[in-house]
Image (tube, rainbow, N blue to C red; front, side, top):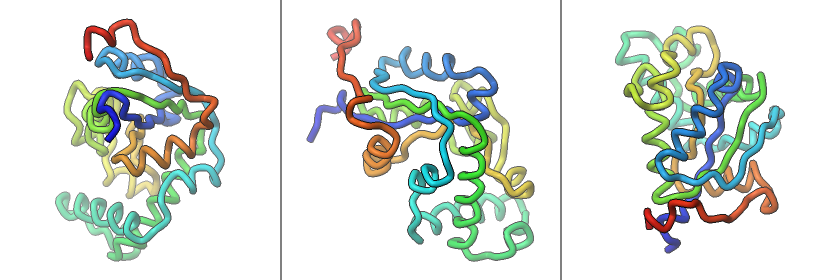
Length: 196
């Protein structure tokens, strides 16, 4: 087992976060928490790059589709009416296409964060995937109000400002997908001796 303070995860500031001038604000929230940025770059991703960023297996499509369908059900909105199907896998496929369209619509700032239980801590700072459900004080809760129902009715991705790896497997894949080993740096923060 690696040291908990060496756990790594990926964060993407999505095009709306870049356009709104939130890059510095977003990064500062992680740094103020004691997390370390060990790689950072701005890119305008291609469809091919984003297609490889998100999984393409039925389990992922099923998960995305069922969460979306459940959200619609709770809001008394017909998923079939908006997606043309009740099949979670087909709904997930449509959403992946919208995610690709969105993430290729402008520049994205990608960075790797390292720190104590970085994956879970970053996800707490980022907030719920759906901004309308995110608590105030989180990035999504403070800077977006978008909902899946609004996005899906308009056949687009939810504009939730940032992406953060969801688990260790995702983090490992995304680190390798977005960064070469030469782009990742190891250094000590000035406060590490106090924190660990």
